[in-house]
Amino acid sequence: GVLQRAEAKNQNGRVYPKETLMREADKYAGTFIKERRALGELDHPDSSVVNLNNVSHNVLDMNWQGDDLVGTVEVLGTPAGNILKELFKSGIKLGISSRGMGSVKEVFGEGDNTLEVQPDFELIAFDFVSNPSTQGAFLAPVNESKGSKIRTDKYKNINKIITDIITEF
Image 1 (cartoon, rainbow, N blue to C red):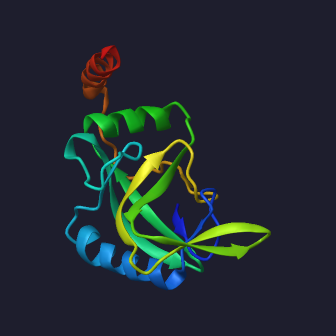
Image 2 (image 1 turned 60 degrees about the horizontal axis):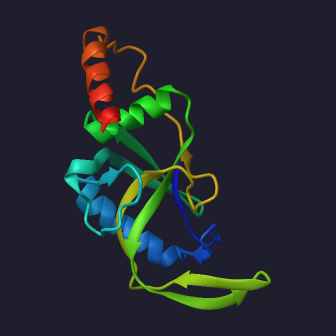
């Protein structure tokens, strides 16, 4: 699904120039995705550091389709990943949002003020959120392949116990 979009104003009033987003996506893919550590969290934290206790997924690949940065995400078997899986199983529609640091510059356009993300932007992670700022950045689960069947019945009781424990706190 869509991870991020260049050259379009998002719901936060920000526009990511394609040149800046391409640079960061290339850097992210060349390091984090390549080294299998493109981890993200369930909801944006206040920190710029990915907290391993809250990791729910790993970005497997990214590519450009026009101005859309699209990708494939693997949901992990971590506590946060299991919550994410259960939300998807329940038919909850979830979005994804980039987390980064950098400055913005106010520009005028489309009848109101717009914030243009500046070249000092640094992409940190992609997190699952309930309301993504990028229009249409909702991801839907797909099975890896129809030919591979994984026996999950023996894990259902364990997952129920973990879910019960997590929801009690």
